[in-house]
Image 1 (cartoon, rainbow, N blue to C red):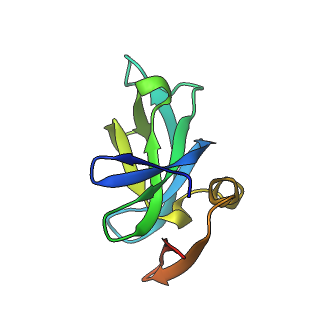
Image 2: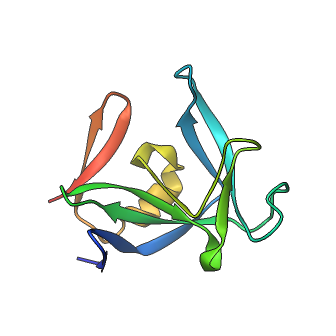
Image 3: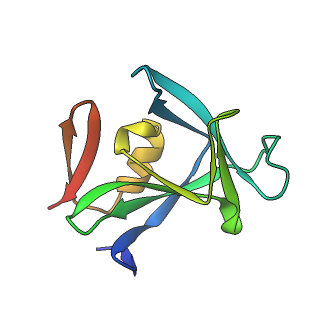
Length: 121
């Protein structure tokens, strides 16, 4: 419906600001980590949030594509990860943001081993 093709995958048009995500650590414990856009100094967090879009892969599975605002890098956690983009499952972001992203799409949600993903109907 509202998808933009980028290479082998598609990205949804709706976008939300993301300030934190929930990810599992090495021990399997779920932790909430801060997320922000960083431009030059990677040692400090900024007040600029990351941007999240819906992401659909070749098989039709839907997750969240997180990137920096205006082409910036994203910083996740104090010492966790600095990257240009990240793909996470639907249950990694807040429910309010997830509802904003899913608005206008006909997506069925599935759970597989504590991971929630979607498939377009």
